[in-house]
Amino acid sequence: MWQQQEIRLAPRSRGFHLITHEIENALDDLSGLRVGLLHLQLLHTSASLTLNENADPDVRHDMDAFLRHIAPGDLPFLRHTLEGPDDMPGHIGASLFGTQLTLAISNGRLALGTWQGVWLGEHRDQGGSRRILATLNGE
Image 1 (cartoon, rainbow, N blue to C red):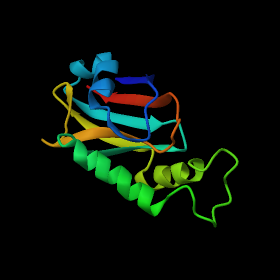
Image 2 (image 1 turned 135 degrees about the vertical axis):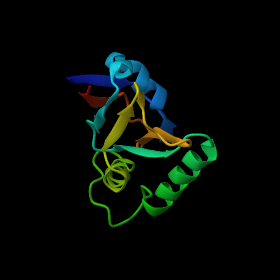
Image 3 (image 1 turned 180 degrees about the vertical axis):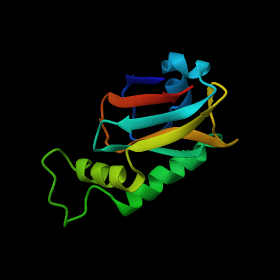
Image 4 (image 1 turned 30 degrees about the horizontal axis):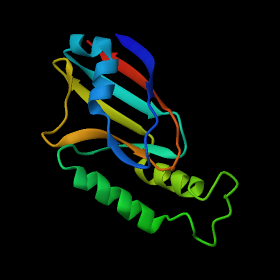
């Protein structure tokens, strides 16, 4: 079985946000798969997807603080500034963390570790709604 659909996420503030349940709830056919794969592709260049800690929100805070430290918006050598001082750091965050994830499916659920969750990294101050193309494959 192959299925592909677009998931639209509500706008979020800059930072890292746990979106595992939003992904699972958007995929009606997930529960019917015994084994499979879910590929998620974020359709944006200034946000990211990553798999990380799902329990302690301090991890998401610290990841955002670290990214702001290594890619602040006021670096004098950045040239891509027409869309605002947060845009180029957004592109850097998207490239560092990536915009795609492939996750295993087992018995109708995402096969995640005990403390793992899917994060959206919003790297702009006003990023707006984000779209994810989700492709399910399995039996």
